[in-house]
Amino acid sequence: MTNADGTAPRAPLSSWPTPLEPAARLGLRLGLGPDDLWIKRDDLTGLGGGGNKVRKLEFTCGQALAAGATTLVTCGAPQSNHARLTAAAAARLGLDAVLVLAADPGVPHGGNLALDGLFGARVVWAGPVGEAELGARTAAVADELRAGGEIPALVPFGGSSPLGALGYARCARELLTQAPDLDTVVVALGSGGTMAGLVSVLGAHRVLGVHCGAVEDPAGTVGALLSGMAGPDGGHPDAGELRVRHDQVGAGYPVLTEPVMAALTLAARTEGVVLDPVYTGRAMAGLIAAVCDGDVRPGHRTVFLHTGGLPGLFGHPDTLARAAEDLTGR
Ligand SMILES: *Cc1c(COP(=O)(O)O)cnc(C)c1O
Image (cartoon, rainbow, N blue to C red; front, top):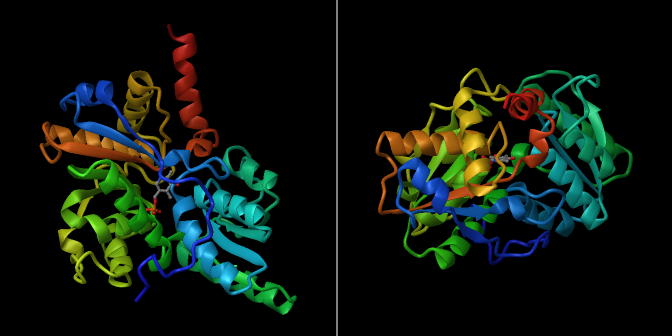
């Protein structure tokens, strides 16, 4: 059982709290009341381009430093925001970073990958392998480092472990201070740690996760993380009680969908807020669908958790092409 975050060591990587901003124009366009929709700006976590992985890294890096680590080792997709922020955290803390990425070296090097290079991370190209093989490769890389005299700290896929999820337990407490009458938080569900941390404090009924296609069994993944954490009153919701939408995955994790493009455009044009095609765009498309089917209703305070991802937009050629169409099309 992971300790409450009061006792786990935390390496400060940003300034807290992040802002909670009203989004009245967007809320009205969705069919909510003018005071219903708010955006929690966790894209503004101030390290390395920002995003939700910073809160998780405060705890995983706190543990790594306590263990005397010299090198952070993690894995992910080539446009992984988590890998990019692990590289930034390593730079901030004076550690080395090794990123084991599920791609060939010929993959386009824009977006997050360009930042990985800027932060001085070493990339190991694992080829287009599945999650299990990527994990095995990452463990092997850590063993090699250890044999070479380094002290590696393995940061889990997406930063999601019961320890990393404490970052979002902390965020949930921050949110309750900013919006005590909070009804629902809408969040992108990737590797699950963000949703698990929120649920551990807010309860299952107040968190709506939008599955992004990063894992096979999203509710099971969140449930497994929760079972390693302390719940709000000791108990844990079972996976069946978790609110998870599965309707925004489309043709798969890296593929842009029409509802996501519509969500990106709407958020940009009503609030000047930029979403990304993989995570926050799916979360916003899920919120739009949830208002349509009555799962999110007017007259209740809804918080959209903006988890970042802007560098990923610049690493996503289809989204860039679609956005550029509007420069020439009118
Ligand atoms: C990783 C990520 C998420 C999903 O968070 P998990 O804790 O992995 O579920 C959401 N948004 C962005 C931008 C991310 O990079």
